[in-house]
Length: 200
Image (cartoon, rainbow, N blue to C red; front, side):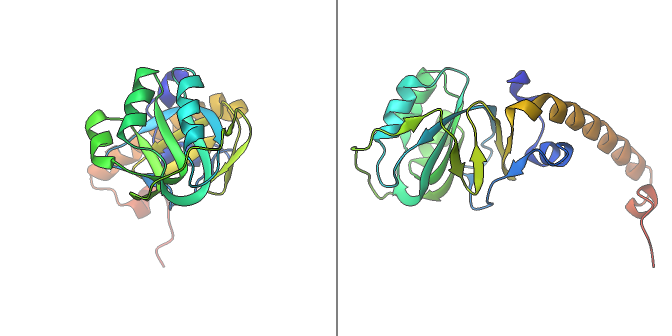
């Protein structure tokens, strides 16, 4: 989706979106340091404590998508190394799950980006089929199929599909403005001076 959001950070996209982007609960975070992902959401509605829906989603999600999964914040290891390898074989870009995962060291070695609420070894059942491409609530944000999802060290943001182009244009402009600010600060100007902030 638009060249993986042009490499913009979650903070830049959130600030540049004119209120369109939503930030997920900060409890949803990278499962391993350095994880980053950007792309369209393939939404999955599952049941906490059961990961059959994830196995099915890996088989059905299109290449180039991110699995965005509502598991009600359940403290179970719904996803691990085997599913990560299977997802990579299918061209899936990453996982954002409101629930738990495990095998985080192995997924770091695979360079498979995972964002989750918990890291835990507690096992799961395989009973509930789940539903795909429906609106889901993940970490307090309602995600629609094909919304832009971006995750990095600062968290996860969701940009509605219809607002992506405008948001990316705003993000490009914001990065350029920040570069000008950095150049001025590196010449000795204070942030108070540059931004004309009150001093007393």
